[in-house]
Length: 189
Image (tube, rainbow, N blue to C red; front, side, top):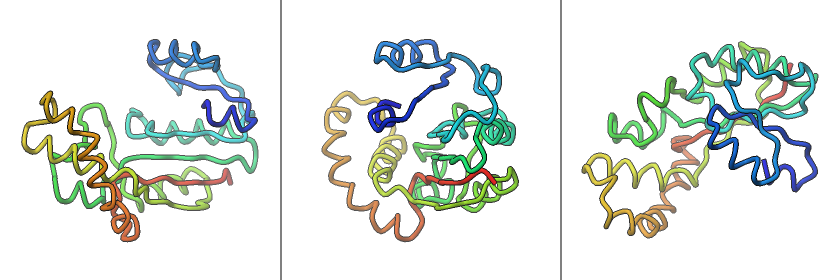
């Protein structure tokens, strides 16, 4: 939100967490605290709706997309970022994949499934991006999960170094469409 506000956008956030809402408010940014499907928002009032790492937490992704569609002005843009269930890290690490996060993640999406879901809710896909920068964190954290070291204090101090060393792995995974995260840019049809 802060980056968008600096670029001249009028912004409004929605977060279910009162703690997160307070932090955002202290930064001088407006936020409504509550469930996205329940907070009071004006229809056709927004140029852009961003759902960055929200949809996998939603208890009802189709309803959330219906709501986003209703909130957007005609021609408005939707940005959705989610973990990629078809990623190399998920295929390699299986139940140790760090982005699996059950039960915090209620749903998981492949690129094809997310595109179909968006199109079914009257969005036109502008671009689908594979986020190379996500892979180093996903791979390192998945290795730590697999070896039961995710909360090891010594390893936590090494994490930034491990993360940096594995960063180049994301580039070929992105090219092969196997990145840990995907981001879709779409327009309200």
